[in-house]
Image 1 (cartoon, helix red, strand yellow):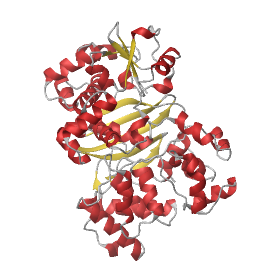
Image 2: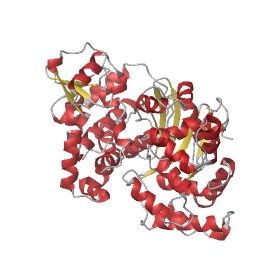
Image 3: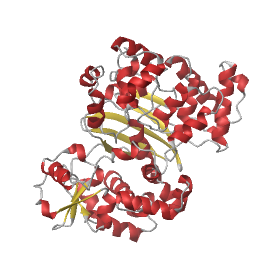
Image 4: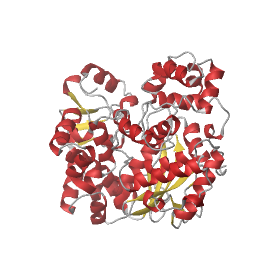
Amino acid sequence: MHTDIERCVRAVRSKDARFDGWFFTAVLTTRIYCRPSCPVVPPKAVNMTFYPSAAACQQAGFRACKRCRPDTSPGSPEWNARADSVARAVRLIQDGVVDREGVPGLAARLGYSARQIERQLLAELGAGPLALARSQRARTARVLIETTALPMAEVAFAAGFASVRTFNDTVREVFALSPGELRAKAARGPAAPATPGVIALRLPYRAPLNPDNLFGHLAATAVPGVEEWRDGAYRRTLSLPHGPGIVSLSPRPGHVACRLSLTDPRDLTRAISRCRRLLDLDADPVAVDEQLGSDPLLAPLVEAGPGRRVPRTVDAAEFAVRAVLGQQVSTAAARTHAARLVTAHGTPLDDPEGGLTHLFPTPEALAGLDPEALALPRSRRRTLTTLVAALADGSLLLGEGTDWEQARAELGALPGFGPWTTEVIAMRGLGDPDAFLPTDLGIRRAAERLGLPSTPAALTARAARWRPWRAYAVQYLWAVDDHPINHLPARGEGAP
């Protein structure tokens, strides 16, 4: 979009927040870059140039605006709506792969050479993988500087910098302030109650956001011990590279309040990335609702509750296991099966608030389970054990860098994986915005009530006009039923 100069100028002049994250405005006279909705008086059009990423702005020598803080804008929705190599690379970089494995590790995960990845990212984002990772390290450093009392040396290494000097130079270059000045400036603002060991931050999103189906679904399907709804917040455990963590997420006007308790602050980047994917916060609800609302049969649902997101997951392998446990059973039964698995094979942890007890078991921990100990039909035992074996030995890879169509083919080759299981994993586990569930009972009931075709083949043909947003159409169709997944639990109410 950054190449459409006229459209970008209009968005900047109207301070349109819908375009935050889609592109960045760099001002040639001040050498500052902003988000489109920056509250300052817009510069003359001749003094504006546009970039597809904050990293490209920084690489061109621009520093972040102190008013609109473009480093905190939502991410571009484009990278979660595509499955090509560039989109997969961006998702992996957001998950911290370059910091942990370097550019060769990123390229190996994608099956390309490092040179090819560099060339593709430069062409689309104006910055290579190292520059994108550097920009992300700067954002992580700012969060740690402003929300914790960690010594600056610890902040530097936790954010992924190789040295304190590089950390200092990068922060000054990107924000035009030293790390100490950033912390002092944050301290002058309104102070929030601090809890030792807890990082509190805001996760931005593009409005509108309908929290009912998003948090309602997570609460209704919460696995006891791993997830819970407490005092207006969804809480869950996280398995991270440097130790376990706990996150609490609460919907607020204009943002989601996030409280992270981490074993090691080096996991902050990955934890934030997982939370944003879980809540689908980089979506573009205006574009989604505009297309779905153009269908006269869906329009009333869109008008009644705009901004529905797809509730996703923090771990695709975990969700795949839960999808198998949920085959042909109720939501409550699926939770019960998963809770038994967690108690028997999950890693225990301590929760200061007392509600969470375990990490969800890894595929490696489940690979040796006794099928006879599972209270499941024999065919589903075979499906589950085959799945965890494939995940444990690496023959099946599910994650941010997964090719969606390849994953569908590999899942479909496993015993017991029909269209529903494959598509629900693609939708919630892998984040494919066009995944569709025509065989789902709730979808078929909704189709009948709305006058849509109710047979899977006919409904799939009718849904072609909803592409590439059929996963969001699923959320609106599920809303037809009066089910707990569609309702935000009352404050103080636990998961059913």
